[in-house]
Image 1: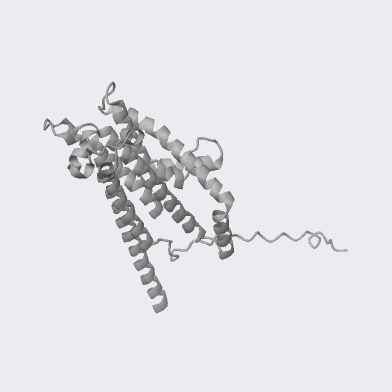
Image 2 (image 1 turned 90 degrees about the vertical axis):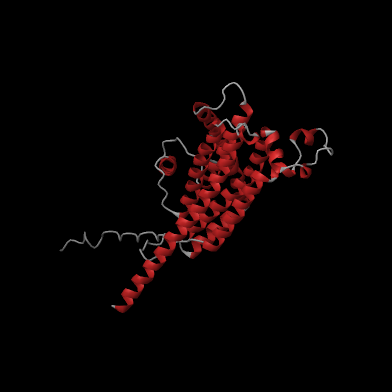
Length: 305
């Protein structure tokens, strides 16, 4: 009697249905050009307003806690005079405005990243992810994520302070001014990626390793691969470069009020962030247009053949 061993073998279960769409060279990437352009325009304009006009249109911190000084209205004085007469007050208002703007910017970049990721899954899974992002649990997780991002920003601000001292910032004097500049640099460069990507983790599990390697690739190797990553990395590079170049005029013996520490590095950092954001937009738009033209040519070749 022939053996029925082969026929008695249990049928293998079908492989689970994958939710991820296979990558294809001609598959377009999600790049919200119009929305991205408008958000960058609004964001950079508000940052410029925060740096130049916010300290000049608001009372001093002491006036908020004590009384309003009606005898020294800021609109009756030159803006340069208002910005330079009390650098610490100017830094405090700039940090406050930048914190609000960077939280909004980080939230938009993260939403962009999640939407781009959802485009790679089927419609049912994308709808499920959207419902999860809009639920109460997602709101609570969003608050926790902002808390972790702010905590990471504070830790990074102390590291920036140490680096500023090593680069020649005053050690025993102007401590609050130096730390305010370090805090501003941390708000501009660390808070957005800490919220959009998650803080770098030093655990031994796979997600922690991926997170750590992503931070190393972006901010140590300076190798962004997507438009979202360029929107985070290029402004950070511009911020640090602008602050470094902004410290150059302080050493000149011109004895101008705007040379007071740390006004020029502060405004250099703001200007560098704005320039970096615009460069990221320009580079990403150019690459996306080139990819779209390449896909159009490939489609035309396939149709012709």
